[in-house]
Image (cartoon, rainbow, N blue to C red; front, side, top):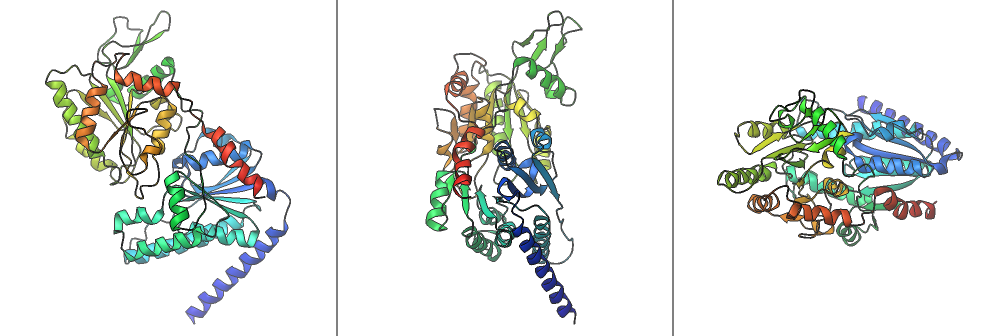
Length: 465
C-alpha cells in the first residue's frame, strides 16, 4: 500500500512537471535572451561560472544563476540588474544509516529539489552547467532542456568520478557508476566547453564529446595593486594578523607603518620599507590532492639556509582558502617555531583577494589535478597580477606554466626549497630572477576573460540559436 502511494505521488509529480514544461515551452517571449546558469556548489567559490554569468549579462542576456550561497559572490554579480541569483539549499548528512544510503538519499533529494527550482524559472534558450559536480545535475538539466526546449551547455572543469576516486579508489563500484553516468549524460549536451586542450582531446577520444577549449583567463580586476592600496590592505590585515604588523615603531607617531610599507604623515606618500619581508601567497583548497606539507617542508629547508648565513630575507607566507584539512594544517603550523618564516591563514573578502595577489612577491601553487586534465585557476589569477609562480607539476600544466619562461615547476619539497632560495636570494634586487619573471609577465600580452569569452563562447551561442 505504501509503495503504491509513493509511486502515485511520483507519477503525479512527473505529470505536473511535464505539464509545467509544456506550458513553459509555449512561452517564447524572452526565451532567446534568457540563460540559466547552474552551479551545484558554492556560487562564491565558483569564479568561472560567475564570469559566465557576468559575460552573458554584458552581452545582453538576462541570467538566472542557481547555486548554493555559502560565501559571497563578487559585487558586480550582486549589483547587475540582469542577473538574478536563486539560492539552493544543501542537504547535510543524515547522520544515521550506511554511508551509501545517505549518499543515495542526498542525490535523490538534490535531483527532485533542483528539478523543482529549475521548472519555476522563466523559459531559457540555454542552460549552462558546471561539471563537476554533475551528479545529479547533468541528468536534471538535460531533462529540463527536453521538456522546455532549452539547449544544454556543459562547462567541463574536471571529471567528477576522478575526484570521487581520490576518496574511494578508482575501481570502487560507486566511482565506476559515477563514470558511466557522467559519460552517458555528458554526451546528451548540445554544446560543451572545457578548460584545456588535453581535456578536449580526451573528451573526443574517450567520451565521444566534442568540446571547445575555453581557457581560464584572469578577470580585469586581477592586476598589480598600486602601492597606496597595498598599504591600505596591509594596515587592514595588521589589525587582525600579527605577521602584517610593523616590526618597529616609526619615529613620527603619526606615521602609519605595516610590516611592508609606511605612509609619510606629512605628504601622505607610501613607500616600501627597507629590509621588508618577502610576501609569499599560496591559495589552496586544503585537501589531500593539494598537499600543503610540500610547502611546509620547503620553507623549513629555506629557514635552515637562512640560519646558515645565506643572504635570504624573512618571509611572510599567506595561505588563503578553506577546506577539510584547514584546521589540521593550522595545527601543524602552530607547532613550528621558525625565525625567518611567519605564517598567516586569513579568510579574505572576495574584493581583497585580487589586492593581495597584486601586492605579493611570489605565488606558490599546490594544485594536483585528479584527472591530470584541468589547470589551476589560482595560477591564472596570479599571472593576471603579474605575480611570478612556482607550481607543482602534473600532466598538462605546461599549457599554462612554461618552466623557466613565465614561472617555475617543481615536483617535491626539495625542488621547491631550491627555487625559493634562488628567487629570494638578495631580495628585493631588481636584477634578480624574481624581478625578471615579473618583467616577462608584464611584457606578455595576456588575454582577459571578457575578450576570450567574446571570441570563443558568444559565437557559439549565436550559431546554435
